[in-house]
Length: 142
Image (cartoon, rainbow, N blue to C red; front, side):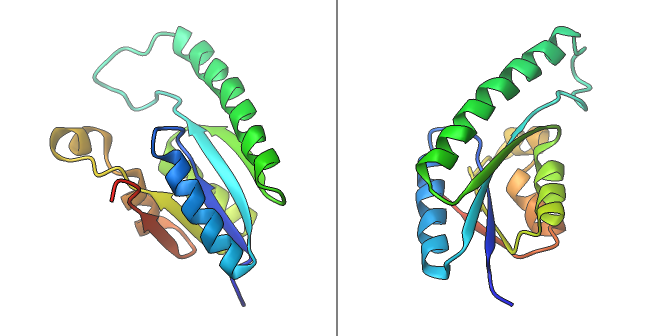
C-alpha cells in the first residue's frame, strides 16, 4: 500500500504556487498522481451578517472562474485531475479525499492568528483532525 493519489487543496492566494511546487515535488518522488481541489465558500454559517441572495450568484460566478483556473492547473501538470466544489472548505476537502480515495492530503497553512483564527478557524487544522488519510501540512511562508 503506497501513496498513489495526493489531494492538493488550493485557494488561489499568493502562496498557492509554493504549495503546488512542493506537492508536485513530493508526488514526483512517490510516483503519485495529484488531484487539485478548490472550494468556493457558500457563505453559510456567517451569523454575523445577513447573507443576501446575491451571494448565491456570486458563489456560482466564483465557481465558474475557479473551474477555469483548475483546468489550467490540470493542463500544466500532466496526469493530474481537478475539481471545484461549493461549501465549507475543510468539510469538502475531507469528504472529497475520502470519496476519491486519496492516500495523502498536502495542505498549505497560512498562519492566521488571534481574532482572524478565532473567527475563520483553521482549515488545515480541521483537515488534519478529521481526514481519513494522512495529512501533510506545508507552510509556504517559511
